[in-house]
Length: 222
Ligand code: C5P
Image 1 (cartoon, rainbow, N blue to C red):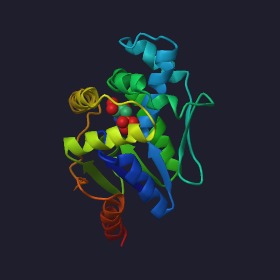
Image 2: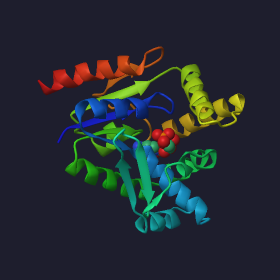
Image 3: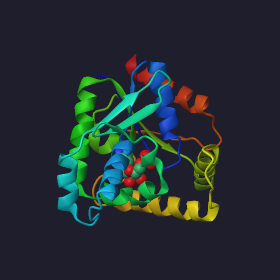
């Protein structure tokens, strides 16, 4: 099975690029962040103590997360059968994912779900640890980065496009905090895999980045 991994910080363009690549390759797209977000949403809804790892592990065991794509590669996130695609993008969920992401027992379950998907489907997987932990033997690995200003700009634009009010200073602070937590957690931290190709998307279009990646993938396949 072909497995392409893309890791990198928030706002580097992973989702957009992963979708574009998956479309070009005619394979599926796996947004692992959506899984962490969906479980965070459920934990918040059930008012689970986010500091209580055992409770989070229990919750994960009682949860099914199903990721589906429509014809336009739009992602539908089903949490126990309920469509929560919009809800999991809220600021509250975004700022609380780190509780879920830092819990080793929860990550173990997430990684098992993700590997299960990779066993049955050719995929472009994106996240923080997909090249390092989830799929260490992936066909081709990328680490997608962009400078902080550009990543913040993209996030601000994304929210504005959705008609949301944005406090730019606050958003930058939150992005910085999230980066820091993603880089420094004990398990599954954001890290470049040794054999990953680094691409800096600052100033590049989606087509430019997808084109570069396709070159590497073609070279790897031939
Ligand atoms: O990619 P996205 O921004 O949607 O991810 C939300 C959060 O989920 C990240 O900030 C990170 O804490 C967590 N995550 C993770 N491991 C992954 C993907 C996401 O810990 N593979």
